[in-house]
Amino acid sequence: MAEVALRGVGKVYPDGTRAVTDLDLGIADGEFLVLVGPSGCGKTTALRMLAGLEEISEGEIAIGDRVVNRVPSRDRDVAMVFQSYALYPHLSVRDNIGFGLSLRKVPKAEIRRQVDHAAQILGLTDYLDKKPRNLSGGQRQRVAMGRAIVRQPQAFLMDEPLSNLDAKLRVQMRAEIARIQRDLGVTTVYVTHDQTEAMTLGDRVAVMKKGVLQQVAPPQELYDRPANLFVAGFIGSPAMNLLQGSLSDGASPARLTVGGQTLELPASVFDARPALRGFLGKDVVVGIRPEDMEDSRLVPADAAGGPAGGTLTSTAELVEAMGSDVLVHFTVQAAQVVTEDTRELARDAGTDVLGKLEGPHTDLVARFSPRTTVKAGDPVTVHVDTGRLHFFDIESGAAIWGEDAGSSREDEE
Image (cartoon, rainbow, N blue to C red; front, top):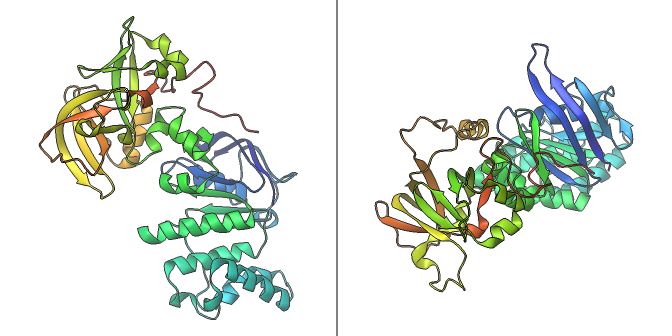
């Protein structure tokens, strides 16, 4: 096991295309770090540079106490697990797992011992004599992981290893990977496009956009304190609702106007975000998580005992019953947020229609309790927990917190 550090790492291809810019990232010994972002954001390139499969153009990569910029991939003492299983179809599971050890001329008795140990960890003991064609997708992926485990590397590097599995199997394998990494305690860097995977697996999650690191933090911190509009919109499912609003100047309590409707803001909002006082009388970007909205008829009438907030009125345009909750889609007459960040989010979601709608018009999604009786086409009054609103500078996209909060980069230890 070892610490891994990328210091000012960049990648520029011969045609001038820049894939990664000034990447500073430290991964602690035994840590599980997830790199996440849209397709083309540079996360796989960063992993391949760490593995030695891509040359770096700038900066320095260290594994343990050794700088490996010019060390060949085979000598970096890392094991990589790809999205393709890359198993030899003519070899048994045992021989696939032990193949790398055989190439290194490890004694057969030691190979058997290490393969048996890896198979026990992975639940593959009963399949050691089978061929890959007789295994399920999840079992094949575990064989690929077994091949990495027996190498006893300083670090595991995983490039979207679950992307070929169906949804149910992905959930099962996520739990397996988390358990195995915890048991082995091996430093792990995991690349995925799936932010649910990132949030459930990582000790910390690093969000990238267009080759630039946006924020790195524990999953819950990313969710609760996104550094900017891009991180806010990328982390969370359904995504955070983003719309333009304006803060009242001098009113007490302070008020937020969105699309002609007004929400009162509790003092706690300004206590948590001192810098927000500097935006009174100005337009801001407002972020509302779907779970911070509810059918107003289900919110306690006693304001003192219920959540802080106000209401938005609209019409339910689409209602999706999910079992444990109900997703209600509705529209407010507030201006859309059209920035580089939101366009990137829209492209990633395959819905790049920002700025093409006539007039102020923003679609929102609320996560209601399953006890709601709202149907598509019904008028709906949506309670908004204003104590949990997020605010962003409309020009820079940076989150509005305090003097030292809301920066787009986190200092690494």
